[in-house]
Image (tube, rainbow, N blue to C red; front, side):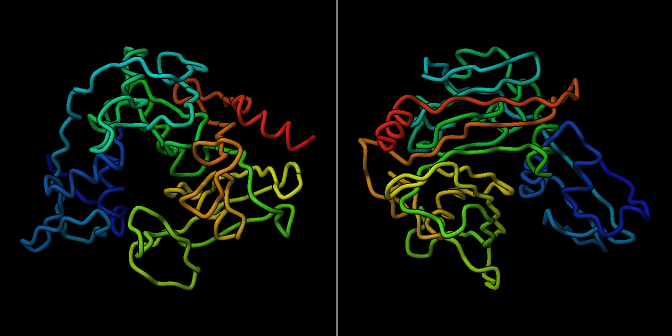
Length: 307
């Protein structure tokens, strides 16, 4: 299909323009269509295939956005808890140690395998490997995740994540005590050149390629000898953001050996839990908020520290 460009569209990014025209598809799905050159701008006979290309007078936009592939992942029994669900959304509690979706190094035993076993309908808009997945948390981070059960709900929830109207809060145990009881960390985040599996915080003055703005609010909830319990609130959602920002503050999360934390208290990964989430229901438009207790092993660590 092709679209007419009006004067009010001039200056819009190609991916944003197409998302406005094709509201049933997520921006990432549309960007994949552009990347594969199925959707593009035709300008003076030249084909332009960058998502961020700005529309100009005389442009023609051609678009092919294929429906997501049918999910082929095997349903499996996986340990997680469904906190809430209706015909549009589900809120689940993911345990520490469970990968969110399949990848080359972890093809099965993931949360997605478990979702397919427990929930009959999941959105397909995020591709065959990530049905229903609106946002992610790390394998060794536990806590709440939003799941979309149809494509319309997925698009709406993704917009809330993108526009920062979906509130996500975490509790983490850090080493030491922060100078300020509460504050904001604002840096750029990108791949660590010395280890591409890790992320790294860079100053805002850095102009390096592929660096993205990352903002984390923090508040000290409780002090212990040599440790502090911190509530983190995400304003952006970069890979490993809280873990990287904790290291940047020189107070890494307990158990996060990847980012400088010591392995203690028998933990198998970082002490970090996504304990609270708030969003607007995609259909009813009611504000919904969910909060969970820390897992038993985290709670016992805090009890021992209090003693």
